[in-house]
Image (cartoon, rainbow, N blue to C red; front, side, top):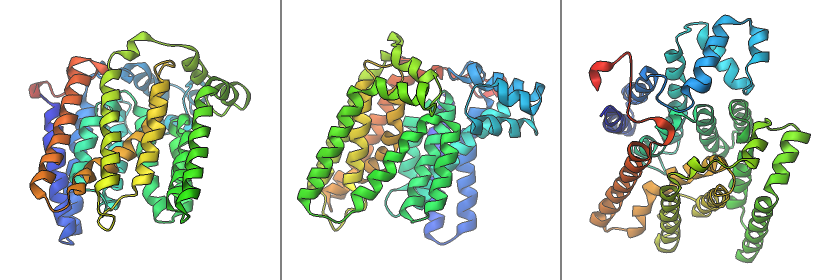
Length: 378
């Protein structure tokens, strides 16, 4: 199966790159990193247009419009965010072949996820991070293409914020919103980053946590009214988001059980880590991670009533997964055999999740893989 080429070789070359970075051999590390990013990008770029639900719905039409219309007419005709339209338009100046755009969409997505892993390598294992990406996010990115670029940018902006590069953080955030306007909810991420690092008494933090949870609960209760304001009055979000709130599509429930189970496992793992990790050995801010999971879980529960709303929670889910999953085993201290077993267990859980989500449930319509370019590989 062609997807397993990515699942094997992307982590392998990431591992080789990680070892070279540890040896201060940056040039060879960059070369291996490029190969790690290139392989899944080529697989994504070579795919047929029926692989990935939204490929033929908005990538191919946008490319065709970009190569046939004037710039002004193209920007007026295509009803998507300006960043995405400019991105596709620039690509079509070099090639009007839609597969080239598919390649660059994936390349940019993985590039910023990889940069996040590289900049965070003192906290998380780079190889494990890319395993998580390949099993939980890669096939999703074949459909959620604009959002995937946006989420990758937000993920990268977290490292910029932690490095106190606030202007770069702001610029990255604005670019992310220009690709997927729902990324505006990521403002909450920066608020949580500030809150989790504030030094204050435990009682004050509990009070603030209560206020945050109360605000989150009110947002859920009055979610329809909030979206109505943002779409119909303030015009911050496209009108289609209000349509999502008012419409419920039964087919979206097809694999929500697996999503719920995965989130419960992560929440349990977060509580376990918080209670058993040696504070001196902890490399992640568990309060921040659990806050991300709380927001995502709340939005996910809301998605049982409102179509597609769980996609907003992904802006919080993926950072939490990238920080937490590689570090859960550290809660077992010096019991290295158990630590290896826990890591392998998470890989197995994610692999089973991938099998159920994509080959079995046919979510995002990415399986089976087809290509008119590399038919000899499958």
